[in-house]
Image (cartoon, rainbow over all chains, first blue to last red; front, side, top):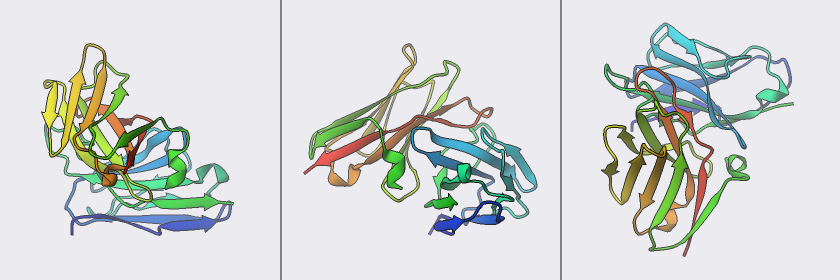
Length: 117
Length: 112
């Protein structure tokens, strides 16, 4: 089944304790992206990657890191989490191709609810 | 999850009726638009998209209308079913250049 898989589904941590949220897609998509979703603010892009070893900042990159060593994986790293990073996080991917818009037909994972105490 | 649905505009529709969800977009240069559906506890799911060279596009039970003059997008759902209950987001961008900008969403509640 074609899907974007995020882990963990729920995570409670404390301020300053490094964490990684994993994301993997099995659709051979070039483009992957991370979003956070907050009440009243909608979905905001954190980082995105057009292909392996290519990553760029989105609208709200502060406090986050990403890497794209393999096409299928795009982990989100919080080196020193803070309470304002408590949010619902989504990973997404799409089959970006020349002439398309890079966010065309994004496939989203099921989300990771993160609470930073 | 459920918390992201707080304070959203809500549309209540009787089962079997047609639903119309509206979206005003912000950037007159946007040329690509998407509608997503987000059920409680799940990630957004692609419904239908449309480019700015079209004013209407139909899918299965869904139609998207684009009015570039007034920067308005709508999603019509025919014969609304209980399974259509969800939060619906519109999103826009400029092809190849910018990330999607998502709207705040509208909650659709279907009354059986």
